[in-house]
Length: 445
Ligand code: ATP
Ligand code: F6P
Image (cartoon, rainbow, N blue to C red; front, side):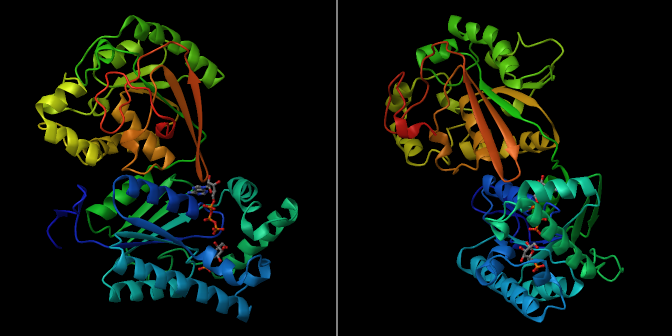
């Protein structure tokens, strides 16, 4: 195995290129898993791309009925094979021309022949293959998946949902006739694979080879689809916020205290029932103080990983002081805020890396309220809302506002509650050294 090295983006990967091949019958959550894996990898700055064979097939057969997927349908077979070939060809181009690291081939790949064909092509191109199979025999869940996402798919646009669901059921039957679960016959033992049964109730892992593969596998093992939300809040306004100073471990200002007292009401209003939340804070006084009036029966946990971005030598300074004392650093940070690392401190990129265990734990958990800091909140928000990493450090996250994020099948819903308690702005535009600057409208997200 080649020695581990950084990929120039701060993430430890080997000289690896991986094709994640999804496997499974229709409506088993393959596209769901694929898009989550891609979002996670992109958040970690690992170049990744999903190639969905269905969208290639749609170019030739936009709204096929179930019999198109019957393997005795010669024309259907030809078109499906052509779609898979086109997706794989684009994937190889992407690896070559765009220095791709992880491609996700999103199709049913439900026969041994198809899997063997992909393995041969990838091996010739020096690309590792890992099969990720989702198996599910929970009929209620499959029907819910069909109703939730399949009847509204472009395959059934303009059609009666009942008819669409019936046709999709028949499509699955056609796949079932030829479907072989990975290594069911014992002759795919040499493959690297992860099998997820009934949304993680049981998991089988075979021949995982390197660091990046193990990260992806560990992440996918932690996914669940139980309904839940994540609430995010900054701490209440602090004494340092009033002075325009960064970092530190200051206490809350009187208005910050008011926010702490109001937070339980905001939470109650946004949760909508008596569900208990788990509360995570950083280890700094201002987040702990902000969370201290929340109901006693909420579990509370302090995470060092949720502490604010470490400003190193600049900790405790105002932006004006930083510009006066370290003008080159001030400029360099504005030039590339995501990558700039404070002397003796951290960059946003560093924060993302230390937040990885938090994201992993969030994926495993249900309802969590996180009380944290401006930079950390931006990074967590960027993960859920798939925000561009370079832009996320400029995002405006107001004080005294509760954000509720609810993950859905293919995205995340957002709601906000404004506590209506005035606070200074801690947002700063490029080049500015203002103590409290009003965010310009384009900086709002
Ligand atoms: P197709 O082969 O038709 O493209 P698919 O397998 O890609 O189907 P998705 O479109 O991803 O299926 O289905 C999304 C639904 O699957 C969502 O409602 C999601 O909650 C659910 N889901 C996510 N993960 C799993 C899983 N491991 N098993 C079963 N269902 C899941
Ligand atoms: O049936 C689900 C589906 O996503 C189709 O939209 C698509 O044509 C097909 O799977 C792709 O997989 P296969 O390799 O089985 O043709």
